[in-house]
Image (cartoon, rainbow, N blue to C red; front, top):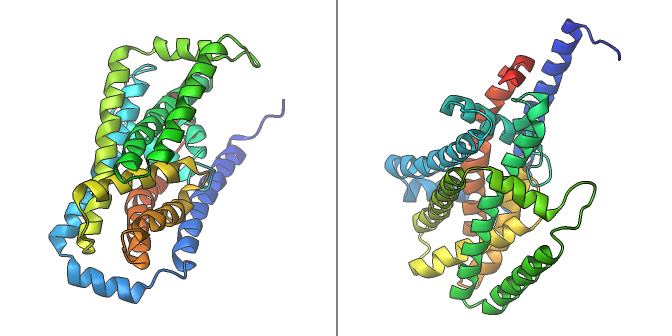
Length: 309
């Protein structure tokens, strides 16, 4: 095996970190500057008219709470390997988010988090991240299906429930089938190895996070004078998140995907198209761009010695 000199290894790591950060910021800038539907002058005028410093701080607190619950989820799950502090969990979550911004469905997050642990712990870290994201997806499906029913798309909801039932029974029948050493039975065994206390806390924190970002979306609609009943608005938001999360996309395109799906639903209620686009963009900026900016700091500070965590 070829041994890489220490200085060369340091330079290589620095170059990779720099490319990740530059790439993240380039993709963010490209999406903001290249979106022809964003009428910034109109947006600026409306923001100045409708918002105050207190409103902006209130909306920002939703974003802080959103990421904080995600950090708590990760800290809770990593206890299965070893206890870590909030600061360490923040570094891993935000650094991994930055690394995963230009990968499909944030897959880069899995490798990003694994970099903070020993090589022999990589499989466990990837599995825990799968559990972390998996519960959020399950909650999104549950709330989204309920939302579809409440706003009248019950045929879609029944189709989703039908698919879920078919997949459930198919998984039971095929749980012993092994493919390259993996099977559903083995996966269930791995899940059951994690203490139930950790699973319960993971679900609770997942629900809290879901309620935070869905109601941040709701508050932004109120700020932009969208006058719809609470149940209609929150159910539509749940449907948007569910359907948008089901589509393959990149983190840096998140607002475009959610914006397109949101336009379909809210357009039915006569909500102005550009308001829907702006709200989706603001949500993306607050919950992806700002955390990526902070995560870039952690990426640049990352050292290979951090793998000894």
